[in-house]
Every structure is written in C-alpha cells, then in structure tokens.
Image (tube, rainbow, N blue to C red; front, side):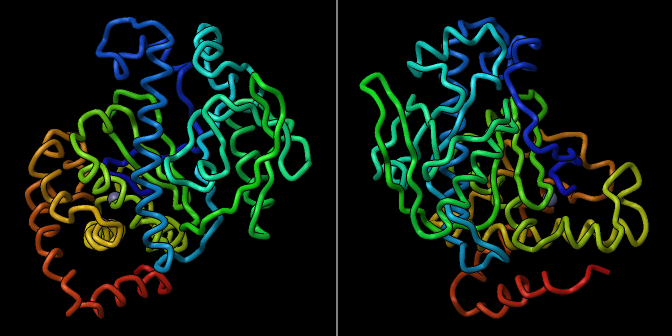
Length: 333
Ligand SMILES: [Zn+2]
C-alpha cells in the first residue's frame, strides 16, 4: 500500500452506509441533511474526482505500463446505499433499477452516445448485466463493459421513462487505473497499484481542480511507476515500522519519485504544475499524522522538491522523465 498518510486501500469500500451511520458530517458539515442533498452532493463530488482523474489518465496513456478502454460512465446501484436513500435515488434518477448511470463525464464516449444520468442499464453487448449486487456489481459491470469494448465498440441496452434503447459507444484509451471516492472524514489518499482511493475529507480541503490533480497525480505516479507491485516484490512493508532501515529508504525513495513524476503527469494533462507545491504550502500543511512514521517528507520539503521539478518540464530535460519512468522495470532495492 502506498499512500499520503499510510491508509491502506481497500477496493470498493463504500460509502453511504457508513455515511448514514456517521451522520455524513463530511458531506454536509455536521448537520443532518435530506438524503436527496447527500446523494446530489456525492454525485457532484464523484464527477469532480472522476473528471480530474480521467484527464490525467488519458493524457498520460503513452506513459502507462498498461492501458484499458474508457467510456466515461459513473455507475450506481441502489445496493450501495442505505435503505433510507431509496426515495432520494428514485427522485433523482427516476429509477431503482439494479444498475444505473449516476453521471456521464462531459465530452466522453458515453456522452456522445447519448447516455444520461438516470438511465438504467439492462444489457451489455446483448448479454445480461452481472448477477452480483452492491459494489461487486459495479466492479463486475465495469469489467464486462471493458471486455465488450475491447473490439473498439460496446453496445449498452438502456431504459428510461420513454422505454428501452440501444447506445453504441466507441471507447477511448486510458491508463489501466481507476479512482474511488470514499465517504470518510479522514483526509487521505492511497493506491493499491490499480485503484486510487480518495476520501471526501481530503477532497473537501482541496480548493481547486489543479490542486486536486496534484493529490491524484501523486497516487497515479505510484501506479505508473508500479511502486506497490515492486514494493511487494521487494518485501517492503508499509506498516508501523515502515520508516526504519532499508525498508524505510525504499519507501522514502518511492514517495520522492511519486512527487517528482506527479508534476510531469499534471503538466501533460494541462494542469498547473505549480499547484503541487501550492497544495503542500496551503491545505496540505494541515495533513497531520504522517510525519512521525518517517516515510513521508515534511510539507515544506515536499513543496521544495515539487517546485524544483517545474523547470524540468521545459523540454530540455526529457531524459530525466524517461529515466524515471523506465525505472519501473527494475526491482526496488
Ligand atoms: Zn505516496
């Protein structure tokens, strides 16, 4: 596991069940709000996070170890939500179908194909949607769509109030990585090498999309550099004693490399590369709890390193970036 503050990533841990129990203070500032507002706020947050990540991942597709098709759909299933949210889901999406479209990323293949928020998805390339429920259904449906799209197009059977229709989607290529937003007041982000997980607590403290891109690009850099996989091969732990000895040296190196590469990934996607240092001089300063484990540099040190990367983007320094990315094929030691 690789993360800003040592949070292990648990794929697909969702969301509103915990949110309902905890009163959703992250989403609505500590006071109970109507479910419809909670669901609407979560949708906006999902779109924000997915849009920034999608831009990073597609712009850097040539630098990734593996690629996949991307169609720009954010899926939902009522099983993700506490029963108290059912009416809100029906009001907002007009459906309580097993699998529905939470949102369509603007300008995406799904948008071009006419998919809309609230569409129920009933079949993929003529095959029924997976049997799973809850988050497992979202994962299985995503996989089924990617397999369908592997030949350059996927046909979704969708249903809305007007009836059933077919939508033919021509996917785009993106890096083989994903992002999950987790409803949690803890301010954290991490990756298991495939999926980035970001908490709403962290999202809410990031003022601009450029700074959000900085946070996501750091985790994405760990994926591009295959850090989690290489750390596992090197038997590097990220637990309580991660900062100690040879183990600690490797962890610190991967953190430094992820910071370095994050600036390159941001710039390639048209984000302001100065926003990375600005994050650590601004809101990032408040991130506590991770300095003492010795694996992550302090906020000032990180800001300085990030700033020092910006001049390397000029085009004179391509070799620096090529070498950094090529290092992913070597064992960590
Ligand atoms: Zn990291």
